[in-house]
Length: 132
Image (tube, rainbow, N blue to C red; front, side, top):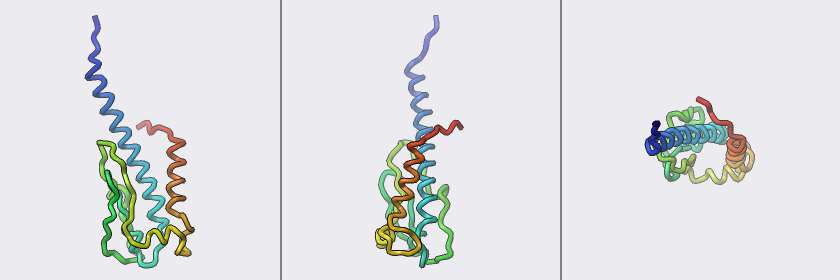
């Protein structure tokens, strides 16, 4: 007679699912970061340099970098692991980022962050599992 240990099987499936969902969440956040950060208008480089990725709650930390030619951190350096599948955030604590979003710069259209969010959301809606 064959026996199946459903409890252990269920535990293993849960672990595998959480691992895959966490990887997909990280991929979505990476895509959003890759859309928003390069699209940030640059005069001093301060706003572009202060995009943060966080888990659980937004990170509005601001550092003092003001270099329009500075490179911004790569997503892999920014995006933390999220094994508990908490909400993830791409945020910016620079006081004038809202003004930039509202179109105060000629370098980016009004609503450029929302355009990036909508683009990524459309890609998620058209989700195709990563079969890795």
